[in-house]
Length: 547
Ligand SMILES: [Zn+2]
Image (tube, rainbow, N blue to C red; front, top):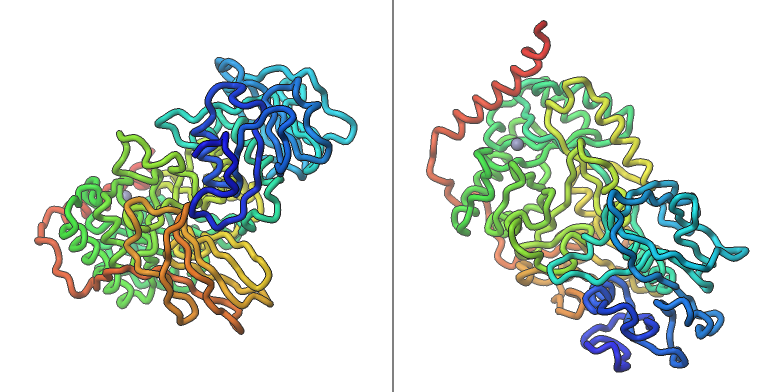
């Protein structure tokens, strides 16, 4: 797409867009890939412009300070510096408490390696300083119809880079400033933000006893109740054959504080990453589901249909099998665990609130409890679920690690805690236009409250790599096709009159029943291995207690 010609909308996009001029044309070298990526995530269209040619714009990004007088009054303007040389060791960017800033940023200090270019301007009376470096204003704004100034520049997106790699600690100011400007210009076109959602996940525990390693379930539940959080225990389906009555009673009675998730099937090394044919994947995932159903019958505790792949390893075949067998998502630290050594699938990898992979299964990102919390700020900005995980040994000294994490996460905004399937079912954004509610799903199933006066919903998804494995959308008893557009997939409006809540789902085109598939060939060693690993885990606190 050429930015030099005036085209009101990219082909195929029905969405209204705001027109943003970039002045002067090609001032700072190429920015095409960066602007393309920004057009995919904000309802904007960029056009290179020259001084004297600023008609018809909704906003303008000025790359040369000497041209600022050319901008007509009342046109929102962002004055950006040229990107400066990288600063070794970085500089600390201190954000103010201004309400003009997104909540996760307020009052934060973050390290930035991108260099600044000094601006000769200073904030004027009435301007709000948003961030400073070494006590000097580095980003300020005169409000939505005024001028925003940043000492940081916007760099081009490298050929193999993702936009997300420009929005993380040590490289964020360029994209952050532009995003905030675009959101202000687009105001009423923006999708309404949902509350942030959070959960803890602890890998490996089972219900063979009321404790697992350093983890005592009664204590954990008491902690979750007191600090109002939620813990998902990722249980190996193989372990489901044995249920301790006291452990089961504890979990049954405290479902709002603790839930169970699927953790592989046998938990052998890189288990789901090794399933490299559809048949092997379907047999293994179906066996996991059968084991979990039997466990549920025995214990009375539901296991949420979200998979935590052991060791974060997962093949695309395993993901597709999960989708066909009724899983609602998987939770992994990397959106494409099978692409580690490859280029990203698109510049928007890792940008959405969940990645829809291998036919459309949402991958909810997770993050280790031990990692620095700065990335959570960026996750919160991207409205990604805030899922922190660990193992029983992370609590050898008690549950303080959880207390601290709850407080850090709750500091990021209005945060609600709950199980992962609930997080997946509320991972969407909304935009209302009169009686029509647009729902952009980052999941296979969404539970949506219908505001009074809304008579129809229209369903959207982001692009799905490899194309969707679902067939149309189901909502309030209606089934409708989804058609492909510029920014993903969309349905026609579906009537929802007289409803207060609807469930929207994208059912698999070729569903499978776990009961109808035969299991993998029996091998005794996974059981032997689990017994050994569990024995080791359960011994750890005893050994640690010895003088
Ligand atoms: Zn594990």
